[in-house]
Length: 114
Image 1 (cartoon, one colour):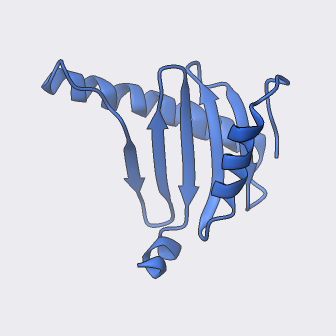
Image 2 (cartoon, helix red, strand yellow; image 1 turned 135 degrees about the vertical axis):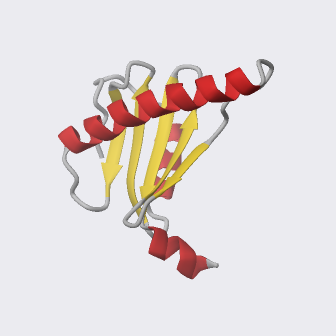
């Protein structure tokens, strides 16, 4: 469990993050600010902070692009959730005005829950 900015995170938010990381198949939970700086990160796989920074930077860029596409198609609309699935991972991104919540999970674990 690491808070990157040294600031205090709401205990309620921290408890929610701890609950998310305990879900079956969840590998990483990352919160980044709008500049893609890590605010919070937790891992079930021992992933390095550098890897989490890479996730944050790349997903922030992709989220900006996806938001732009949504708004280009309908100016009154906005991106509320982004889900990416590859052979090895499923990445879910919940963008907010100031933060991005990213959860990386093993897709084979989520299939077994159904």
